[in-house]
Amino acid sequence: MAKSTRILFIGNSFTRRNDLPGMIARLAEVGKPKRVVETEQIIANGMPLKAHWNKGDAREAIKRGKWDFVSLQEQSTLPLKNRERMHEYMRMFAEEIRAARAEPVLYMTWVRTSAPERQEELADAFLSIGKELKVLVAPVGLAWKEAFRRLPGIILHDKDGSHPAPLGTYLGACVFYATLFGASPAGLPADASLRGEQDPARISMLQEIAWSVVVKLSGPKPAS
Image (cartoon, rainbow, N blue to C red; front, side, top):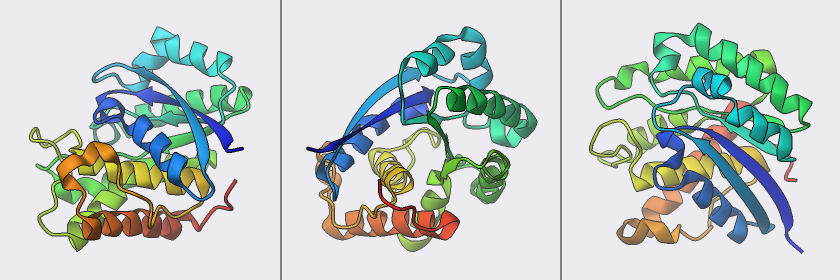
């Protein structure tokens, strides 16, 4: 019988767009070993963690859910504009998540197409608080940076230059899969939602990039 993992996603449209939680669950279904992933989302467009905290719905969901992991996604530009505020609310959420016997996961996002040179700065905002709190960081933004380097011309942003295109979300799902389960997504089938973007060589490269970035960041985690 496949092992069940429960994940709560707190964030905004960067999590909702192209159904990141669903992609992660579908990767787990075809992974080795196969896993059943149950998800719930507390999502509001453009909402930072401070607003989620003050509204209260996210904290209530943390308390009632019996989660294995809780993903925290900050408003996309806040890590560059005000990392102190970001860190403050990640500390507060991490305490609540651990009190509920779940594991926090910080969802590192990416920079907009207008500021590619700031990806390392954005990444540091996540990695520094992740190190302080001793929590998992899903380094999606760093995987995007590596994909742009290794696959010139790949389109990971949507037309607005901010949100993820389907391949961007898929790369993020591969990073989450590797981060949460300590297993490489290499060789897994492409997500059906990608439709015309299922070039086998490109999908294989994105899977490889996701695994290599996760391993480089923290080393492979024993599969659970």
